[in-house]
Image (cartoon, rainbow, N blue to C red; front, top):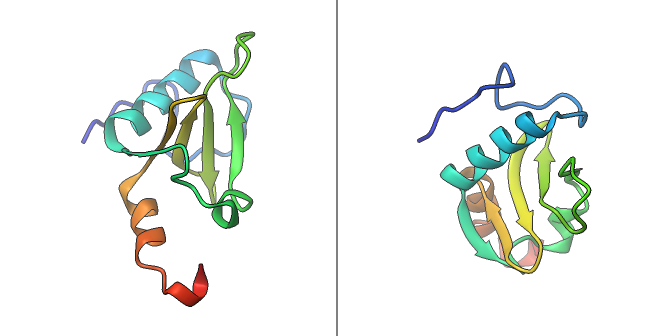
Length: 100
């Protein structure tokens, strides 16, 4: 597991005003430790409960990091898909069929 944390005190993110360096650090944390699940890897039911942080860039359709209860759980790369932290991914996999 990569423990890079150059611009923040912990993996928890209190706000969304990240510098480009902090955003990149958080992205690398998810990219290094997450699992690629494709474009449809996050259901709309779970997606609406997540808080989005858009990449601080002028590039259209940049990266988007998603938080759950202040913790980074996924990153979306436009036209590529989602990379999700394993603990959050398992929460979706173990859900009963009647909860989907």
